[in-house]
Length: 137
Image 1 (tube, rainbow, N blue to C red):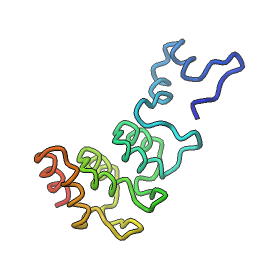
Image 2: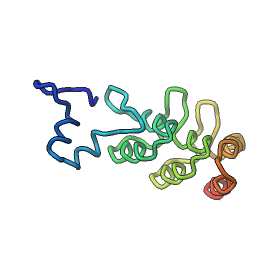
Image 3: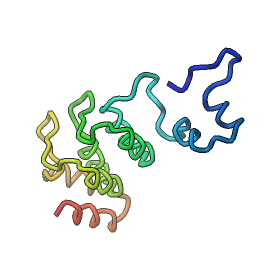
């Protein structure tokens, strides 16, 4: 994906840049989370969360990918966001219908003590930690 070229060697992104097509630019340029080089699927949402790329998560959700999809290790995007203390992503995923009761393959849920502790450990500031706890209540 994103590497296909026209006969003259131009990429879709190059053509959009050349023609000033800003609507296409937004969908063809993924600066933080790198496209996987295959058709997008549900496990790309947890991958974008692990890359801490909120914009990619928003785009993937806009494309209709399932918010409660599992990655290859059996965790959801919400569990990853909680575990990394990414409160903005936790809020985004919950607003998009993520189910806080879904357990990972390991049995961890967003609301489990282990996940909360991991979120607090990785939180960058005390305020972020309190925000995470508020979201979980």
